[in-house]
Each structure stands twice: as C-alpha cells, then as structure tokens.
Length: 165
Image 1 (tube, helix red, strand yellow):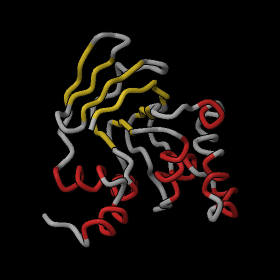
Image 2 (spheres, rainbow, N blue to C red):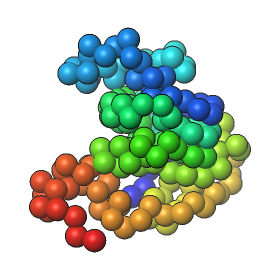
Image 3 (cartoon, helix red, strand yellow):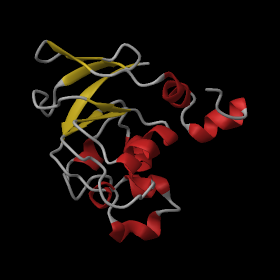
C-alpha cells in the first residue's frame, strides 16, 4: 500500500473530543455531516480544506481520551489517507486499523504543515518529497495489512469469514 499526500500538522495530545467534538454527538448517525467538523477544535481550517489523500501528522498521544470510535471514522471520511504520529492512544490505534485507516508511528518533528509525503506501508518508508529526506518506521504487521487492504475489519470478515493469522 502506497500513498501520497499533503500534510496537515497537529501537535501533541490531540484528544478524541478534539477530533470529533462531543457537541456534535447528535450527528453520530449522520457521519458525512459529522465529518464536516473533524478536528475543528484543534484546527478550524482542516475540515473545510482537507483534500482526498491528505495526511494527518501529529505528535505524541494522538487520539487520547475516550474510546470514541467516531474519531478515526471521521478522519477517514474527511479525506485523510493515513495518520502519522510519534505515538497513539492504544484504543484509537486499534479503532483506526479496524475501520481501515492506516496509523503509522514514527518521528514527526521534521515534517511540516503542507509538506508532500510519499508513504509505503509495507516497506516501512516515508519520504518527505518537499524536503528530500526519508524516514523508516516499523512496517504494519501482515495481519493488519490484510485488514487495511480490505478497508477495515468488518469488510475483511464479510469477505473472508474471519482472520486467518
């Protein structure tokens, strides 16, 4: 799985409430409408301007707080193809993989807002095409790659009838 996109940079400790604000709880059954408010408490310009394939890059502890499963769903629905962070809250990371949103752990200090990235999930390689440098990261394990390649855990199980590890 390879992807290319423009960076939307965020800081450390972005909570699930900043990703999918609780005041829009009433929209949880209208996901396209809820996605219009993705990350607006962290950065107002994200939701109205994100483009298909863009990349969310953040610092430590991304997705902390509640286990709000809507957080990775609305990031994916907003158009982002992947989230790259120094670290993730464990439940966010699993929710992201389960809904088919790749989540990569690597150093993000040298990546800036607006940079163009190329990411190869299987090779564990991230190239900042704007600045001309490369990072390596631990490739996503094969079982998770299978889930991601089908678009998430539910799609995988519908197609294959269960995980074959």
